[in-house]
Image (tube, rainbow, N blue to C red; front, side, top):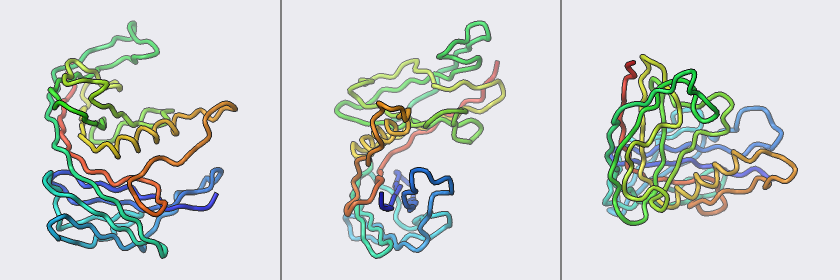
Length: 242
């Protein structure tokens, strides 16, 4: 299978654009993912503002002029290895939430779904209509990736969770003294579709009857893999106290 460009890009409300450009690696390759350090990346909005993103290393590019605004439409152009890839996104408003407490699961109560530890709970009222969400969980400011997990992608939409979240537990346990941080992104439908398909692929067990790896949906032109995500982010933290 020929190599393809992979573009992971986002612009959040009140933040600069962040982009990482890499290439797909051969299926059996164990070396690091090839990065592209020579791309020219331009972001613009529907008011005519434009900037070229700065290269930071490891395939990452960052803006420092255009700040994400829910009233604007953004276009990202990536010139890499002789081809141009473009995508368009908007930024939904963030949805505030609160951490209402934490549930404790003892060693005796632990099972296949709950390990021993503390599980923070959240509450939020969500806007009506079709809305889409990405959840990220951190332990002491480090993204939580449990040992042996295939991914840590948690997404949902209004069709599944409705307009109320009340008492929802984090999927990961925390220990006393740790800081649990929760980020909830309200994202576009295109980003939701991308993460939904990516999660399905990462959790493919690779067995004989499994669905073979396939390209995820994308809002980029010209055959690039990835997504340009606009999002509003709300974040809350809780220090775990017994």
